[in-house]
Length: 115
Length: 158
Length: 100
View 1 (spheres, one colour):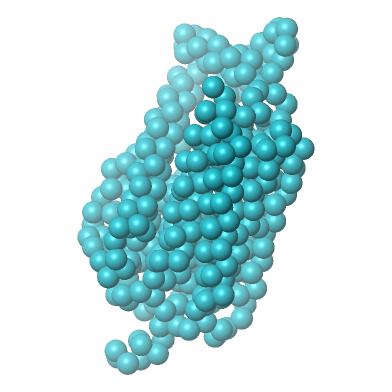
View 2: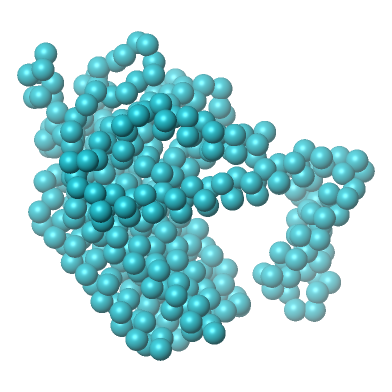
């Protein structure tokens, strides 16, 4: 029973990781790729660590697995956000470039965002 | 805040009382203490704490649903759509009046929910810039965040 | 049963690492390479998980924690460094001038 649960979670997680990796290859620019990393990779590793937790069962190490899941959930979106931030600040070349959709009336030019 | 401390104290007392202390018995104690706080709301002055706890639960439910939806959307874009049909763009979003913790939570949720990744914040902390994977109608993206994420977060933090 | 699952998962993770390596070799900008570095680190975390299930042990949990944090700090330090250097990436600025 436990083996079946673990296998199911592991396979699901690994398939999401594969989707993220395909996204890394296929999507056209850095920002889109960071989408794939932030979402699919987080879910994939989350499911894999959950499968590990289901395999270990309850115990002292359960807390450490919870900590690992927590770190993964925190760090992967932040890393992808940092990459997006750099691409935005440096005004990186992007796919199908259109002007930023700004709801503010006073529109500032993008190139003034350089730091 | 006082109610949270009281709840944790009750959980610890339950942990001491149980014969085999473990994580699950701690959670059981926490749950029992929470039921106690719900039942004795006027005595412990914990009405707002209980409301915020239920807000947290609704937030987690909404967030999980959005997160899974986001993953399926990304999978669809990655596997079945050509690059020509994807229109990524930057979108700004108004966050006037939110506290810094709410901004942090909102930007984290935006990073993990459908089609958006937080990119930047303006210097006066009034505007969030995020990147949308499929930004054909920016109004729709904004309205979606307005309807799902923002009320859930506000229910939990206020 | 579970051994078969683990072999399948290892195969898929290896393919993912290869994809990441492809992007690292080809990636037009530095940011692509940082992203693929991030992915490879996370894949290795997944492999450690698979190995510790295979060997029925929980001693690698610290390794998982350390590895995920190392990957994160690697990304942060790269981005911090790139913030301070100017004009290493291809930008939109030339296109902007043309449009004006």
